[in-house]
Image (cartoon, rainbow, N blue to C red; front, side, top):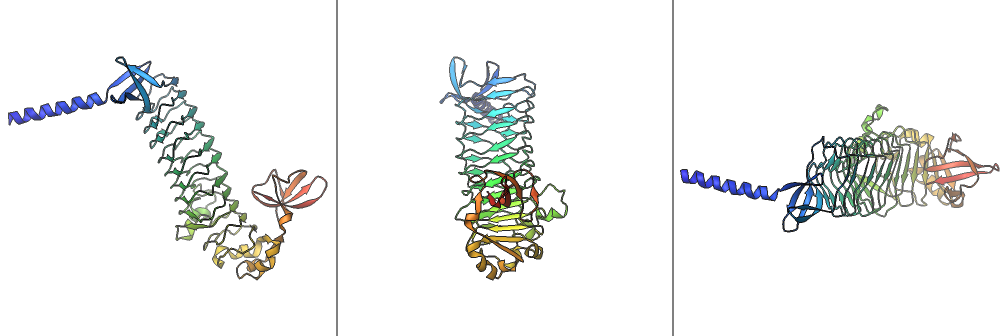
Length: 413
């Protein structure tokens, strides 16, 4: 028995020795490092105490330990977690991975530029930084991991660079002061709650390359007023409550749902929700204008159920989209103005669904101008009910008046 215990102790000691050798930690010019591979001569930035007075940090491409040079290829787990003094961080082009919590819960880090060598930011890699208002994401990444950049409340803009294909669950949720969101054309998937809680966003544009948006991706975006879905040949698959919980619309102060005013729908869509309250655009008491593009061939059942305050539906399509009577409420059929191409006006009037609108207008193609191409001299805008619009209006069809007194209609995209 004694020999067996002694053998076990020796084995354990050997294992601990190997483990220690694999995790050699050293300091170099004021920063801590862990050796990753002796064979490749690589290391990562190690963990630092929260109270380490680091201030402005420049991480070198290579460091030395016992006379050997090691290339810095990663920021290790919790490398700068919770640091109260870090104000600036420059990361070298040799770094490929930002590990979990590496740049998280800092108090004074204002800007962060990830070099294009970075191919992965692990979950919560850049998380919960109180003062981080500017972020440049690496173009070397193809996916943004779950919670990689979430809960950075001071960010003013979120720019997804070209090359990113998948934005995973909760990647940017609760970046509550971001007023700008730019999603690159390479993105194909926006996952569950990816931008939930981005409560300062006022408009979102979904590129045509996006194939799927997960449940609650834009929930708790209380100021989101305009959603534009760009044209594509294939329908966009939408999860439940993509733009917040329709079921909460009885409480207009609830932040779970956005206050949609304008929808620009330039492709068909489907939804995984079976309950009307989970549909992306239903039960929106704030919705006023729906613009439907040429590529929208059909509209799912109950899509705009409960959107009783819609005043304008503008369709830029000669062939009426297929839909049944559940799409709109009786209030919308009675009170909203349906505007369609002049050449298709009679066909819409004869359609079993679209002919139910009490007010149908035709608009000649030459009479609708793109505001960017034909804005010269316009001094005032009015909605289709004749109410004056202050400032430049959001997307939709409006009446304009020029300085010389001439009037017309304009399509703002």
